[in-house]
Length: 139
Image (cartoon, rainbow, N blue to C red; front, side, top):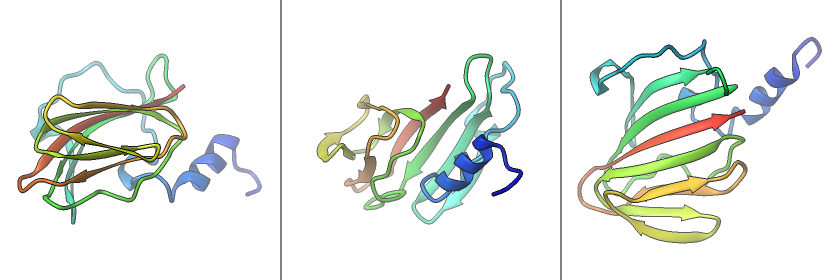
């Protein structure tokens, strides 16, 4: 990969591990407020993915904030790991979060923290959509 910067090589190598919507950090994130209708919407077979913010900040190399309305019985992907730390907050529905081989039932108000490089995933085990918000960052 001659001529590529180290960060570009790392992004290329991790491309298979990260959802397409959060692969590349965009420009510096502005101070702003967005409603769900203004977020970047991507309709996936498993549900509706919204990205509110994606870019750099004064203190972070990469910051992504979004939400997913996950269809009943679905998961966005198998348990995975990535170089960013992540918080995930469930606001509607019921499901299970796997974190380092431990599976925990979750519902509204449940929150997960996953350090960088730790295996984690979420599945909607209910009969209604499961909505969660996620925040990922890397220094």
